[in-house]
Amino acid sequence: MIDHSTVTSDFYDLEALLDDDDRALLHRVRTFMDEQVEPIINEYWTRAEFPSQLIPAMAELGIAGTSIQGYGCRGSSPLLDGMIAMELSKGDPSISTFMGVHGGLAMGSIYLCGSEEQKERWLPAMARMELIGAFGLTEPEHGSDVARGLQTTCRRDGDEWVLDGEKKWIGNATFADLIIIWARDVETERVLGFVVEQGTPGFTAVNLEDKIALRVVQNAHITLEGVRVPEENRLQEAHSFRETADVLRMTRAGVAWSAVGCSRGAYEHALRYALGREQFGQPIVEFQLVQDLLVRMLGNITASAAMCTRLSQLQGAGTMTDEQASLAKAFCTMRMRETVGWARELMGGNGILLENHVGRYVADAEAIYSYEGTREVNTLIVGRGVTGASAIV
Image (cartoon, rainbow, N blue to C red; front, side):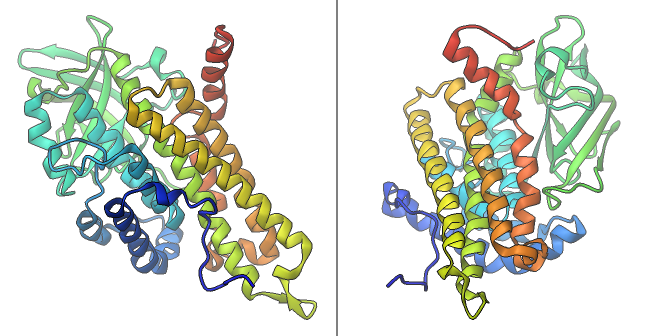
């Protein structure tokens, strides 16, 4: 007999690869998501608002910048970092995205591209989540081609830099304290990074409205009009787009893990539903087609989680390549799209009701599928690695 008391999607027990302390932290994250996020998240998703009152509790978990060494961060393995992203996304993909932007992209930019003084100035407070970060790269007219088409400019004026341009889809930017802005130097054409503080004159961030995915995430359209940033806020070790790519490489594995988490959340809700739902006088889990859907979902989840696990091991060893990260992001998000669709299918019409949660994962999957490298772009990166020929126009 199957024990129905515990629903899990970790079919190969990958969690056992963590040591006891890391596993205990992962369980605390799971408890936080189950007890504090799940009861309220549908309401915030409907209103397209972020539950900022949860930030102190998230801060107590100590998961901001998990894999960063020093500066008040835990310094854990990429495997734990990835599994935390997965666990957050299993509870709600928007919460995982919020933490990925703050603890991954924003803190990662400072960690990889900042001077020692800058790291000491900002990272400890960000680790405590006293300062929240955002990451401004994508522009209204440039997403996948931003490396070549970056239009936001910066110019040196004495001890300051003047920034002009626009950014779009910037998570956390309406309420973040520190916003990383990438801009092209008008004199040298180099791509440089800056830490812009909220409230700086000329900086405005307006929420994008009417999204159908990740509605809890506060994505902003940023306008920079003569924004003056002191030289001390220029990321001192960012000299070209190569450093920007280093940050994206570090976080791309986390997006793949988040896709696994989105799949797991939909699957676990669908399984609980199937265990309690009756049709034609019997539980629907006893129907062959229902079991077929469940096994298809579990196969996708297990294959994707195993791929991400190996990717994180390579990342921890310092041997992960762009192609390996891109394959995981492309593959896991494709399998996620299938999985959440099957979860909705299993529930029939009830699957579109927000109260059953799965509809939220179906919608949120669309954003995870596209952000931080579309399937097409990641496919071409892998294709270049496989063939030696670039098909990127």
